[in-house]
Every structure is written in C-alpha cells, then in structure tokens.
Figure 1 (cartoon, rainbow, N blue to C red):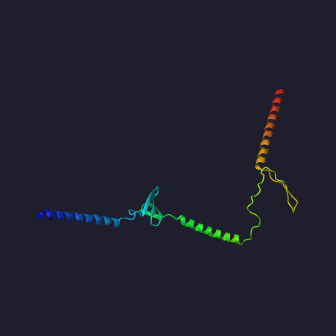
Figure 2: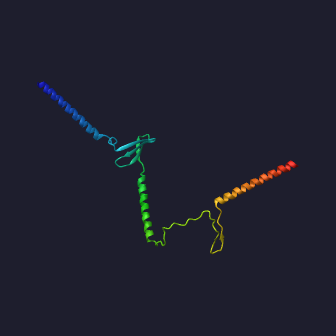
Figure 3: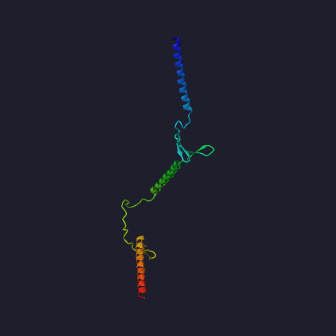
Length: 173
C-alpha cells in the first residue's frame, strides 16, 4: 500500500513541478517579450519598408532596410507645425479685435442690404470733377462678341458677292 501512495505522491509532485515550470516559464517569457509583442508598436507595410506607430508616444517612424540593416527614422510631426500656426493666427485675431475695438465707432445702420445694381443697365459717362473729362465705359465681353460676329457675317457676304461677280464676269466674257 505504501508503494501506491508514494507513486501517487511522486506523480503529484512531478505534475506540480511541471505546472510551476510552465507558469514560471510563461511569466519569464512575458517579461522578456519584445515591445512589439506587448502591443506598443503597430506595423504597417509600405512599398519602401514598414511604417511604425508607437502606441505609447504617438510617434510615427518609417523603417527600411538600407543594405546595412534596418533603420527607423521619425516622420516629421505636422501637428506641431499646425498647432503653432493656429496659435499665431489666434494671436493675430486677438490683436485685430483689439484694434477694431479701439478704432472709431461705425456710424449708421449696417444691417440694411446693399442696393442691387442692374447688370443690363448701361453705365452713363462719368465726368471727372477736377479736370472736366468724360469717362466712357468700356464695352463688355458680350458686346465685343456681338460686334465680332456681325463683322464675320459681313465679311463672308462680301466674299460671296465678289465670287458671284467674278463668275458672272467670267461667264459673259
């Protein structure tokens, strides 16, 4: 009977030692695992290599094999440049608001809509007050196009008329 108890005890002690080694080995493996296995880095393949994101600091790096080994270089952070520009614009806005507040007050009612001008209404010649010169407004692009089409039609008719006269003259002679 003693031999059955001792074999069972030795079997339990062997199993306990195996479990302890396995658990201890797993603990050692977890402690010595690289940071990429713990989820610190996220890798994304690119045509030139790998894009690496450090999930703890937020730094993005490009990694490539340059022949002598892999090298990672931090990507320039545009966010800091954008934050600096936003800060500069906010300071300029505050400065302009202070200038506007210190400037002369605006008189009159400013909520009224501006009167609409008629785009088809012809502008009248303006007379300069100091030199008494008349300023004639220039024609619009639409006016120039109308004149050009008229001249083209008149030229074609003139050519057609000259061709008819030439045929009539050559046929009678």
